[in-house]
Amino acid sequence: MTAVDLPDLRRELLFTALRGVEGGSSLAFTIFQEIAVGIVEGRLPPGHEVNSAELARRFSTSRTPVREALLMLERESLVIIPPRRRPYVSPVDMAQVREIYEIRASLYALVSELLVARASDAEILGLRRWQSLLSSDAACGDVDAYFWHNVGFRNAEVGLAKNGELQRRLSSLGLQMHRFRHLSLSLPGRLLHSVADHERLVNAYADRDAGLAAAVSKSLVMRGYRAIERAGGV
Image 1: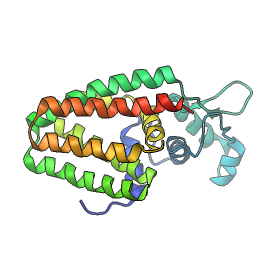
Image 2: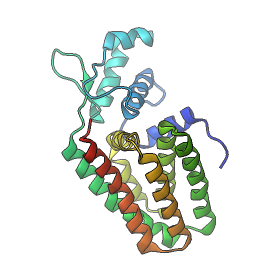
Image 3: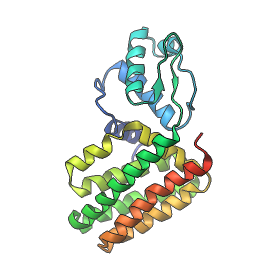
Image 4: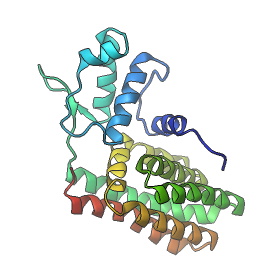
């Protein structure tokens, strides 16, 4: 796989996770994207206040595009807009984390089964190129790069399952899923565990072992949840 500019990859992958957000070329979407990435990557923690006036100054605009961006963020459950108070980054709800991870684990087990049945050897080789990026990121401890390359790996898997409805179901989990995944990967020791799990998964694909691939995929997802649970969220 040729080198991919990380900001471009981030924008591309962020958009694939959005649910009904329109106006990708608008200023409102640009503001939305900047705040969303900040929340997903943990630079804007739960409870952080989002200052509309400051955003309007930063983007040299009126407050109207800022309000539109905040409404998009609210739809993605990343921001809470209380009456007569500043918007703020939503808390991490451990019950929601568990439920989303349980759904995602089951869906990715199905992805793995379908991929073994439908992907060509050349397509599986493409996953090894993503895996190489993950190994490099883990070796240098780059959580953000690892996270976005991990999203790219998983999106590639879903494409190789060749089931459009399954792909839509996974996308419907939205940016909260991204947020939880980045949180998990940022915890101590997680990158090395994750890269080893992905290596096992790709090997199972290459061996055409659907049962093992599904089991590894499900375990990989739930390991991420258990890391967050042990850390007590944030």
